[in-house]
Length: 132
Image 1 (cartoon, rainbow, N blue to C red):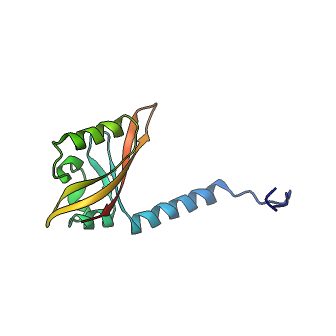
Image 2: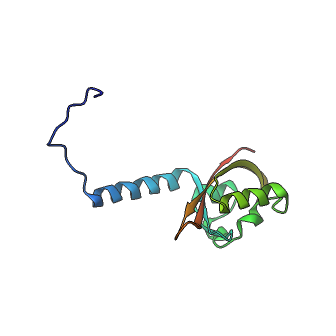
């Protein structure tokens, strides 16, 4: 099918090699994308250099910061609804006005909940693009 011949000599990729590839892919994403990881209670567990730079901060400034403090209107229903959706296991893609160190920035945030133990959300992975 699809012009590919079956072969009994197809090499099996060792698990360690696959893990090395995944680690390399992860490192490449962190080098080039604005990424943040939040705990279910909304604290920033980690942020890439690009994420911190998009808000005019150093990575060390953001660690353990409540993510909601970065959202300009976190008390508004749209942000509360977005966070509730994430904790309910549903991804969120939207634009938010954020509090940058040097002023307000608009970020398009694509956030995806990641399951932890059981069915509960263990963390939230966020990719951001500056759309100011």
